[in-house]
Image (cartoon, rainbow, N blue to C red; front, side, top):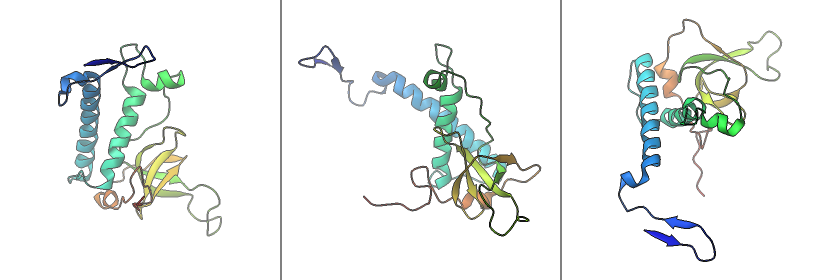
Length: 179
């Protein structure tokens, strides 16, 4: 059904209800995102040797990371990624495997003196689009942003650390707020 909006030259089109084929581009994008999330989920499950339930907060970070990957790496018909269309250049940042154990550089002054550790064990959850900072989960389940990241060589992936993730992209501190 097509309507003419009075006073303008724009046509408003309505797709038929419950017809996924009428929304072809949106449906295709949804399928691509599902495939990317499935790939990330299966990869994580293989590394930790356990299932990653969809109701767990880690799943929210997985969906966020999948969308970020698609923005930065899926090439469109024009030969460019959405990131290139927005920023005018290809993405060149460093990425790690979702859920990978990493060390994050402790920013600022380290409490406890100059001999305290400057790197803290974490798991990698993705990157912030606006600042390109890494998003990591600390051993206590806290979600933080980090600029410096180093992979943990020969460290086994940890289901226990994955289970500690409490926050979500919309509530990184793990507290749900009522409006």
